[in-house]
Image (spheres, rainbow, N blue to C red):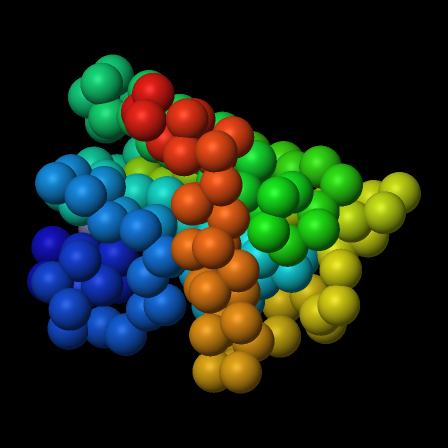
Length: 148
Ligand SMILES: [Zn+2]
C-alpha cells in the first residue's frame, strides 16, 4: 500500500496537519475542507473502508468524531457538525483508507470563513490546529476523549 496517501501520512512521508495521535488512530486536517475545521479521523493501519475495518476501530473512530465535533463547537465556534464516512466510489469515497469526516457547521448551516474545497494555507492550518488543541483541554471535551 505504498501509494496510499493516508498510510504515507501515518509514516510521516506525506505532510499533514496532525491534531491528535494515539497508538492506532490519527486525526488531521482535510487538505480541501468543505467547512472551517473539517478534519479526518483514520486508523493507522490500512483498511479500505468502513466494512473492511475491524469493529473496534470503527467504534473508536466514531467516538473520536464525537469528541472532535464537540471540540469544534467549543473551540472553533461551530453551531453543529456532521459526522460522515463514505464507502465506495459511488458514495464519494476518494481515498480508499477508511476515514471519518467531522464537518463543523456555522450559524444556520454555513461553511464558516473559508472557500469550500480550496487547498488550505499554513496560516489557516496552524490556527485551526491550535484551536482544536486548546478545545481538547476543556473539561467537556477531555471527558469525551477519555471515553474513546
Ligand atoms: Zn492506507
